[in-house]
Image (cartoon, rainbow, N blue to C red; front, top):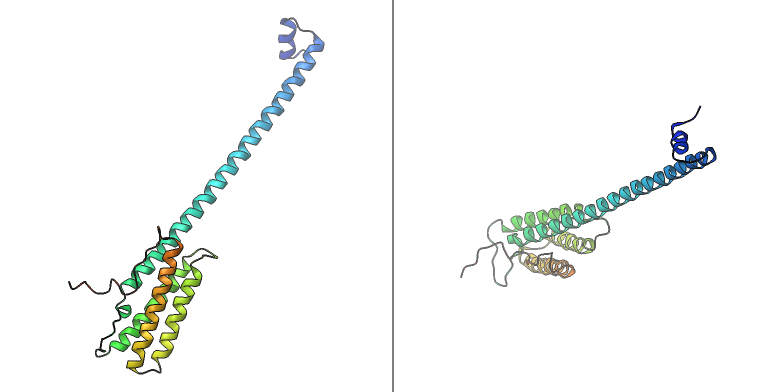
Length: 187
């Protein structure tokens, strides 16, 4: 029985011997098409995978920046960090300040959970937590007057770490000093 391809070849002036090679050429073309389709598919998948990875990396970087900026704004709003050289303690102000420092430490921990693994911001957040812990330890044993000095040291340490975070990426990370937005300007 003669195939349709062989019939077309014979009608076009081809021979029976040429018909066999034509079928082989079609088989080679099919393999070439298969390779092109397979390559295109794998290349497309690789591009999609790479685009997904880049998007995730960008999103995690933006999430980290948002976490750091929100932390800096929260620390700026803390009245406990608004220290001055000549202030006197109000009734129960000591307990309010201790609670505020504890809350600040918790805010740092929450921000740390949103950072990327091996983030460059981690050492700065660790230093803030250490400074808060040192103040909280002193608050349990120091007098109110001694605690003023400890609070000044804490504020300076947190400010230094916020400035260092800002210096890492000045265009993207805020530089509001702790306590700077806690009280309205009286001018």
